[in-house]
Length: 220
Image (cartoon, rainbow, N blue to C red; front, side, top):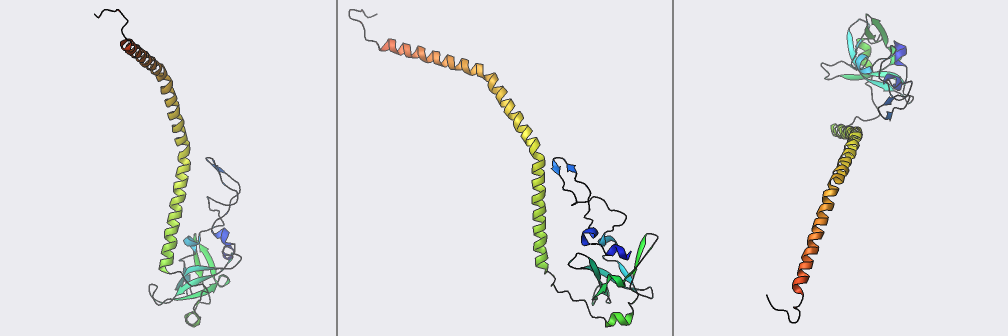
């Protein structure tokens, strides 16, 4: 079980894939995504984050709250919360992975810290991260940005998925227009001819009426 904790962060996050596949018209790059969990993989949130840690006497001495990862993306330790009641006045300590003992019985993993006696836990210095935790406002802004980005990505994907249907509808509309235009063409031409004939007749009548009377003609 210790060996499972040693792989890179990429392995912990299940970033494995063998071949590129095609989803619709989109080609998925090889080696980037995965859609299944193998027998030698597990999710940290399910089996490690929040897991109870037992002392040498079999009693719970704390729970794992975070992972310590080095520059090579290897898990080197865990941050364990110990002491306090319901998380209050709790001391957080760092524990090297090599100091933890993992045992699996009937599909259940038990994590033990053999050196985690009451006296040692009381004496050990709290874990001090070098990077300050983000404020509530900063995390809220990041979450809002994340939701905005996801919404934009979803809208873009929906737009791309709808494009073929929209293009097909546009083609059908254009075809219907051309058919209607062709069907109406004879009627339009006939109407033009009728209007042109009427205009010519009206112009001829006006010309006749505007001619001067011939000399010697008797009025009717």
